[in-house]
Image 1 (spheres, rainbow, N blue to C red):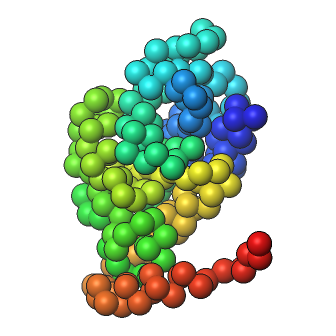
Image 2: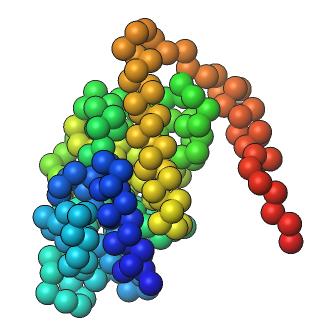
Length: 209
């Protein structure tokens, strides 16, 4: 049941330290909108999930959807394969976003988000339509983006895959910042990233019909 999946993802992100207090939100797509964490909620509670339309209208219950509901709706618009969206203020992601810089091709695992870099959307006030618009552009064709002076977004088809992507993005941002602290990281060339992308086609366990 998607309500249980959203609650599990929310709690697990809290347990992993990727969401602290009310500084993050989670949603799951359903036929007529989304199930989203409430405004001011915290992962240790994971209660009061709100059934809302993609326009923010509460469709059932009496809760208030996260102030970032428009951000989630924008990701669902531009990422039709996404069934879950996570927005957090995880430390390393937010630190890099506060530099107003994308996560570049310093490591081939950046490809796991759909391109040669994870873009950074420009800063605008949280919870606004303008932020949703900028995020939509930044995440288009990808499964993650940074939000300048704010945090990050990831999306995926399952709660487990969404959690994995959130952890990977935080890990890569931390590694990039560590590398930057001692020098200028060497970035992989487009040709090297293309070779890694090709190699990923045969990476992982085989699936037999």
